[in-house]
Image (tube, rainbow, N blue to C red; front, side, top):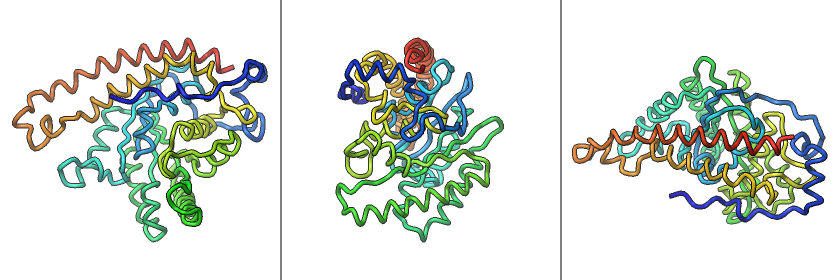
Length: 332
């Protein structure tokens, strides 16, 4: 089971601050300039959004903040969201191979993107690759470009998120600054690749650091690498910015507000339950017995994997209804 929703620990706004945020149009302001955001892409009715990547994407399963940010940015737009994140993954899909050859991992990516058939594919790779240094940058870009070409399809918009920032918690500031500089170079190369192929690129490294400064967050990560809840709030703000929206007013975010958290708790719960159901459809715990080298023992039970699909669809409907009813009151 996934852990409980982390929104329970959000800081409290005063009533006066909250009324001010609503009165001045919280969702149309930015950290630096009130209404200068330009949308890089948009959500359309009926969009099937799929997130693909490594640990940052997989852990969104138990956060729900990125999906909440998408829904809050377009509260009355009917969308579905699926998470294909896999910890430790790279553009070759090597972490997804189970007990087969590494090439099977790449096929696994293609298979599940085809299965979910997204109209919007949000992709995030580069964090792990950047640890290999600049010497491997060209190789990484070549492989990344090939992956995105293999995942391209008619009427599919591809949104590429750059690497997220590291923080000096375990390693020294000198080392981390150098690693962030390498990540920045990877991000620049990814951006150039996106521009050459018509993909949308969203910088995460410097943009998240700017949000961190605006919100006066002590940190974005739990260990210098992996984002904690506030880190996902910063990432959600950057994602909303790419849609031309902002959840900030001054140095506060609606996603931190206790009254917002109380009202949207049912939405978060439905997001997380939907995520868990799809996780079991996507990555059954007993994969080895169902479809792996021991399927001769229990392979007949593989049919039960598909039985999650109507449960997921039912949860999608409940989630969309709840989200539309609640979030439209905050997206003014």
